[in-house]
Image: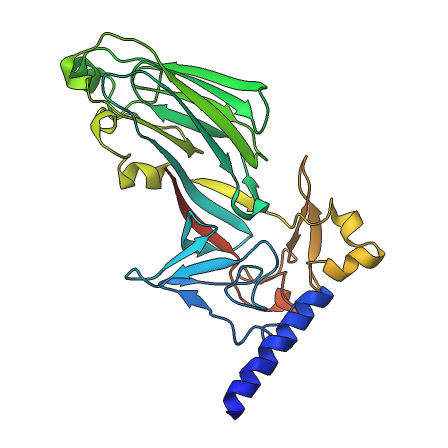
Length: 309
């Protein structure tokens, strides 16, 4: 009974710290889960009351073996690194009907609205006889276009497999850094190609490196795991409840200020929000979101995989 009361008191104190906007200490979070499966959990991310900053709640799916850690409903966190970045695989699987032409619309928004693309990336589309149109989120403003067509399967396998995507079997559209959301349309068109490509499928995913085409990806239900692992990308993590560091540090706003003592506030480039960093001479795994966290070794970056149906 006494132990239960102590655990309740610790959780209540942690919740109070968060409500007052005071960065919690490692002691405040000692009741919080520190891992899910093989993945460690570090603040501002967390699971359970008083264990995470708003917008950073994680979910541990214990029905799988090993358990899997999720940010939002679809982003699976599979590994972690320091420095406050997330590495993710964002995949869209497009269900098509052989012999029928159609238009397919998909959209993406960063989980929790606290992530954005860190560098220039590409939207990669694998498929035959398709036109792809990329739009700004919630608008009809066209940001990019590409076309993919197919020829003879044997010729493509011999000449193109293992080479950079060039509009035959796949095409790409560049995405600038700092993107938190977008949408795109894929339109099929009539195209004459070999019988072997009659059941070809369409896939789309994000990549921060050059994609190398493989004809096997045209016929599989999903892009193979090795390909996706090689085409994941970096996302930066940001506190977005205030416009920038200046507004976050003003008067009443400072009750929600995320950066701890000894850390530095850094504005997000060309977008809302800020992040916190420890001094350059700190340990690699220090955590600027914890009280006195720049003197402790705690990692704050995740690798994630995301699947969109």
